[in-house]
Length: 83
Image: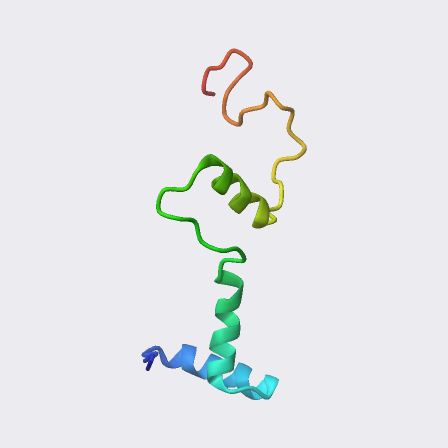
């Protein structure tokens, strides 16, 4: 497959990084996409709850908002009104 990059600045940056790392431009572009590749498998078309939970557990996601209490919902006041 051929990929045409029409932005000259992007081409120069890829070539600069390839030269600095002793890699080919293809290796530089491939390495840039690896973090975007899913770390787990894929779900079937109609997954069960158990399959979804296993998929999420296997993704090793990092927790966010750990400093919030269990009843804290951002943007809502103590009476449940949006503030």
